[in-house]
Length: 222
Length: 223
Image (cartoon, rainbow over the protein chains, first blue to last red):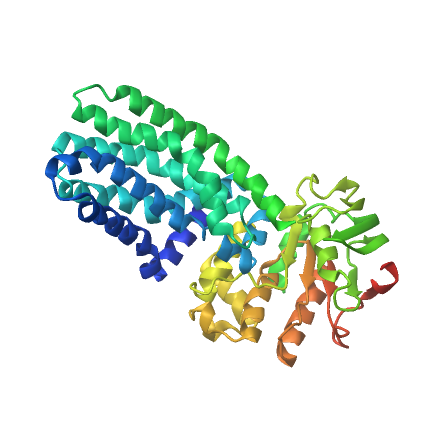
């Protein structure tokens, strides 16, 4: 059971290591997108500090969506996906491993890059810590939802755009509570409500998305 | 081949029969075939033939349980393949794609497939399998550097990992292989049938004189 999870997970990490430049694109996109805001909005520290959490979260969301389109396309094209679904292991384990690998490759670097970007936008230390924590809980949700979107749009011609249209609405709660937690810190309020809801979202997504992804993959291969 | 003897003696249960009953297959708007009946028993090899676009690959995918037939049913030991206990564990499906990742080495790619399907995946076994297919010297090369024929050999090395009676569904196994590659695949087929396995394969040409006795099954009349 767990061996198939680790087999798929380690393989995806190894493939990402062999294609480092491709794996770095989402983080670079994230850094570039966020650093555009001071240029567009203006350099007033007060304004930047106010919008920082939202900017970082929206950019992280878009960076995740950008990279998630290709989660299953390669495996679909070269027949690996067929082999995974014919392995006799539950499809949700494979979907979970793919989502976990996607998070490790793109989500984790976003979490690590967030403080740097936060400093750039003049965020306070407690706000930075909250931002990292909210991204730590939120980015796995994005990877799980993204995997589902990638499976649903597998083999379609305009898969990329369709995936974003399908998944962005589902990702809105994570965005609201993630960015909301940081605003709450700035306003001197408790963040426990936001984190509880983010945690609950993560649990619900982790329990349902891999299963739904597995169904979608079976349909896509028929 | 003495090393496989204990595996047979320990013996999994004999391989159930794969049967397709009154099967129809639709691809988009087109009905590829209908009213098709096929039975594949242990120690039997069936060579599926038919013109291009007749639905050979579609039939293999139905048999593997990757697709559901438009009508009729595909059963393994009397149970529909999609619900048959242990079906996937005893199935080796090699499609026309090789399922090898370009950025892995040959050994890594084969190891992933072996692990996925619960076959032995230790270095010595993998090496022996690749050597059997004449890929021993290329085992640490990246898959992207291989020729088509070498890729096919690497994917066929999965067959050399098999130790128990299983069901092989092979889509154009001889594709891109040279004379020597065809010979090795035929040897593997012989050993496989001898231990009680069964094979459903497609091929443009007759598998050749060295191939085990194959029952021909022509798809053309079912169009």
